[in-house]
Image (cartoon, rainbow, N blue to C red; front, side, top):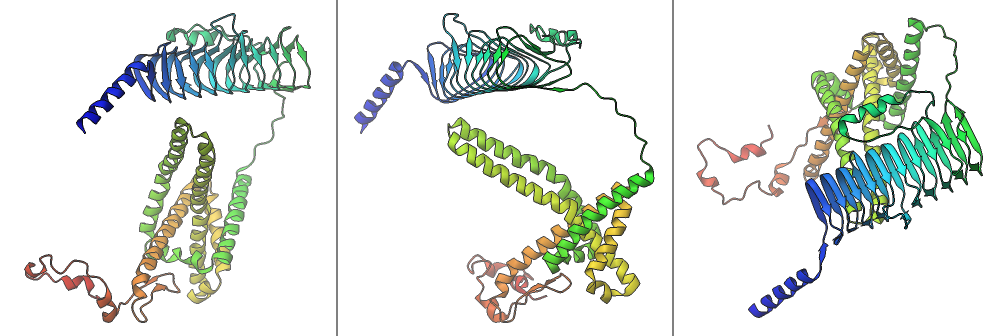
Length: 495
């Protein structure tokens, strides 16, 4: 056995010594990070560096932050980087995603045309494509200027101030540009403390004599584009010159109050009537909690509404982290459908919660308010037998209170918190009843449930059924030596 272990260690050592500079999935962080020209990283590269230089080969994705990054080698996967400057003079076989200030794609060897086969998505102040660079995928970006001097095979979507084309582009172009008469000197001044050389281009759309578009051109801007090259498709310009609109008379206070009242009344009445028709008694269950424990319902509703925002962010971040992990593991086929599914689940849960909080909770409060008015005017029995009339009266009063200028939001928040807290309390009571009903089924006639008033009925467990229940503690754990006065049967008492 010892000889086998020694042989295994010897083989492993020889493998490490003869494999060259090949590394598995790596993490680099610090001031200066580099992948030497003779190095090969098999798997994803995670980088958190001030200066990042990739001169070797990465057989996977590149993910991280590099304030000043250079890719002169080859990346077989996708690139996800953020920083100040990124210069790509090598090859990227996958997609390139970048967020920063300066992005330049150029070729270090003038005798060889650089080929980028994936798509480019960026948000950068300046984007420049060298004349010796050939880009196959589509380009989507936002920033100040986009200077395209290389050949692009796909379409271009860009939102910025300046867009200049000086080569052949075979796809369509959709862009938004600025006013050529605007002053751009301040942009260069802002970058001086960062030590970044930046020459701002004149705003607007410019297509030089060497530039051509095989597809359609659609642009938005205040001025006509300077087009010297050939456009094979249709050219469409949407002007953004401000049009004088005569000042309309200001709406009076009464008109604003009426519009708010009409909107609130219509929405709440629709939700309330639908709840009464389709949910029936369950829609009225929270009224008991609201009537008997108003302060408790208000506090619970307020806390639920406040913590819903961080919970929502946590759900979205968890989905994003799961998708990124799958992308890091090169499971793109799983990441896309799972990301879509989790995104739909998150949107569904968030939508249901806020719909209940904003609309259903206030409709329940309006029903309780209308029932209170009906009890005072017509008696308790008539109020219970006419839920639609109670809903109509309550919605009218609540819509009127919430439409009052200055203080309407206070009534709106109070109704929301009370209704949401009552829904949460009644839901918890229903869950406790469901859990206890499992024990109640063991006792003859010992069922429980909701009363006509929406209250949880107690469950009585007969002694014969109680004897069938498993003991809470084993009989041989020192129950004979308990302190004087301690009765274990107290936990099974009916009181």
